[in-house]
Image (cartoon, rainbow, N blue to C red):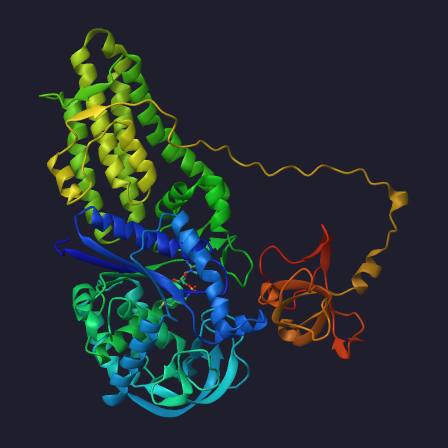
Length: 638
Ligand code: MSP
């Protein structure tokens, strides 16, 4: 960690809704990395922001009946509010509609045009709008049937349009050579093989403009085209620090290349292939590392807005507070794997690690000292061997964390800190200071001082994860440690506060009970009140699951929505539903619903409805009936 500066980025988020736990995850990881590097005295630039152009946003805006710019504007305050609630201490929030970014992307394109790396041709093929990606020939079969996106498994659309192409193929060999020389570029390393295989299989030139949509950065010199959203978005990492702006050359030289770029595994190809090639073409250095994390799943599905299974960070915030959620995300979700989000495991971890272990060590040591009128304790001149073990452990744990955080192994670093807390709890327990105080004041002072020194070190090591709680912890032990400069190096040298002043206070953390799923009450059935049907009657009704692919308001009706529903092999059907007072079209797109599939088609306002969407009326609003976990379209209920 010799470098004096550290530049870290998150992906920029598509603004079609407010952030969910997946977006929070990438952002918290970046915030922790930024704060960790500040502890070594480095100057940090932390970039996050929003990806606001492209077909996906344009479509979502249209469905919401808004102008795209007004549509994206409407989400920004919420993003910033949630980031602030979660103590995301970013240096800059970029929006790809910011004029400096728009100008700089045009400068970038013009340079590539001038040097012959861009040419005009025709694109014919498939496009996945949710992923904003051209599905390459390798990815689909030759039958020219609509294909599913190999990445998100949603149906793609055929596009045929004039495009500008970037000569990606030209950079194939340089990319392969780069991966060979820099096996640590991608963390975890194993992901490199996947990328190398993709590059080795042959890179095709990449479309970097669209002529069938208009929501994007105008392509220099050709008003019919806008910049392809990924060519626009990836450049945010350089435009935010001054690329393309003659007056910010110093900033750019200072911050670029980024030290760490954090991203989810679904956008690896864009960051590990296209982005490095763009930089190579521009003669710019490549970022030092890409940190690729897995997905947060709910019940084994990727959490995503379109699957409708997102966990709301605002609800978690009000239930658990920001720092406990940050702790859970960093300690429990292994970066290299997908992880399941589960409320009971969250409650268990918070209770065990924070309330029972760290919180308890703080409260038992401070209250024992205060009970015995010890309000201030000074560093002893010498230490017993048991105390020395703890002091050595503080140094080693700090060094272990430094080593682990070099590879961004957050959960392993946190495990080391928890091990230290466990050892100090055991030390406290074994030395029985509540007995010692009766006849050996010197040893009693020593035990309290050593415990406080350990708590102080823990508060520093955990401060990137729980900044506020850890500063409360330091206040409770009256630590005078200065967190500026290279405090980690000082911990390794053994520089603790000389004197601790103890203060009574509330528990730092809360203990949570396991949530029991309530046994449903058995109901007594009064047979005479029910109009029974037999199984044959029931089987006549075909209830089938389908995904709502498109959904629009119906002109002249404030109740009806018109949707195209994908029933898998059974095909796509048009369904009209009187649900417009309860849902806007964007709420429904991508959702699975249950439909009466064999209801005789009927005409409503001149349009045929080929099925009926089931819903439940509650508190004056209709609620969509659906399945708990996504199933194959066309599946029949029964
Ligand atoms: N706009 C692009 C990124 C452009 S970067 C130049 C994009 N946006 S996104 O909003 O769809 O996703 C942003 C990030 O959130 C990605 O890294 C993605 O992996 C992450 N996550 C989205 N859902 C997630 C989970 N369920 N779990 C963990 N992270 C996930 O892609």
